[in-house]
Amino acid sequence: MVDNQPKFEVYAPSIRKLLKGVVYHDDPVWIQIRDYELPIREYLAKIGLGLHLDEIGNFAYLYDQSRDDDAPNALPALTNRRNLSFSDTLLLVLLRERLDEHEMRDIEGNRLILSIDEIGEMFRIFVSQSTDAQRIDQSILGSINRLKKYGFLTERYDKRYEVRPLLRAKISADVLEEIKSRLQQYIQQNNAPEPEDDDGESV
Image (cartoon, rainbow, N blue to C red; front, side):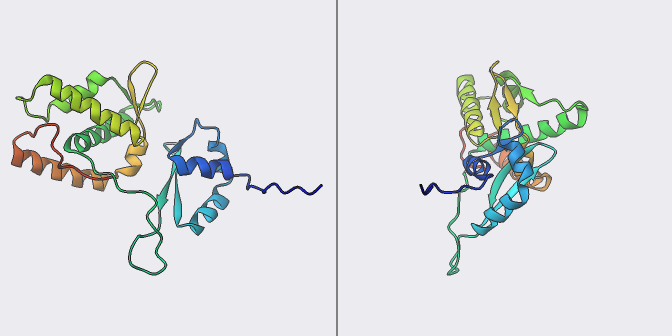
């Protein structure tokens, strides 16, 4: 009897998982990504994708090496850039700085875990004092939920949030300083903006 079943590459599960989003070291396919890194990179390169493998943070994700331009052989973009509100951008910057501070102080490699109250305390310093407290709380929760969706935060069983090292990979030190500079200019021009203002960045 002839076996007509297709023959999959042994590392196919890891590629399929990477196509869905970030893969961390506690995922079953993590070891597979490490063991088959070279053939995975070679396969992805054929379809215009690259593999970012962070050995320090122990996570991996795909990035688009192609460009969706007018060239005849151009590939369509794999993902769209996400436009962030002022609140989202501010929270990203605050969490990125907090992550840097945590990693400098913590010699045991513990994860950065924050309660919603700790996140709110960081955030409230930069918004208009005249803003209704309930409105601020709604804005903070909305931004937290969006950053969870993008993989920068993970909600734990105790309702606290782990700040993922993906944040450091996606927002480098240079990009962080650029965003901080734009935020500062925006805050000065708008005298502590309302949390729902849409003038933010994209990731």
